[in-house]
Image (cartoon, rainbow, N blue to C red; front, top):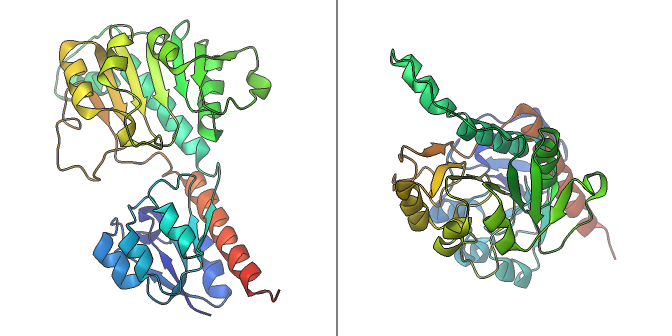
Length: 313
């Protein structure tokens, strides 16, 4: 029936049982290098002959898509598709499926954890005690703080719900202004510029803008209250790295907590090693529940799409 390529790092290092449905359906399952993000050369080597691809966040070039001579469906184990050259994908008639909301709980909980870590200086406190010291750094509270949520999809809504429960004044921006449902009256939409001007803490849960430019630029950082906290579990490119380093050095931003980098693992460590940065290794969706849900949904979406294409018109 053809081959299916598996590339997400969370699935190649320790393949979960949820992938077994692919073999049961009669497909040959092919893996990239376990635990590694495949580069262009490896994808070009592995994709020929594959009718399906269960894809992660690895960057995909047009050359990769050109090499995919039999590919019919790309199924993401997450929501974002900005790593795909969508025009080239569409031109070849390749269908794209997404596991919408499957990893929302894991990413949302990490975002809240990073915000709490920044507020209470947890990494510095832990390191100091571990080294034999007794640091007692004054923290800040989320209750009563104005917190901005950029992007109100599945992840942003979970984050906003938790922040409301913690007593924060939550402002949000989303270009589509989705209905707030149970959050109506507890969260208010504001223009993007107003969000940065008002919020002492900001968390990102959105894709990259179409123009590829950072949302958090030097000018917007300067408009934020002094000593702001910024959390990014979405896309590295949403934040201007150079402007962020300058803001951290100057104290305009007190802490930048990020789970995402332009290159992973990063070779340029100016952000990752900065003393005011809390860095994690793109583990937002790496929980038992999130991996299970995302893999299950991605496999089901892939099989359903392939089977639909096999049905005679």
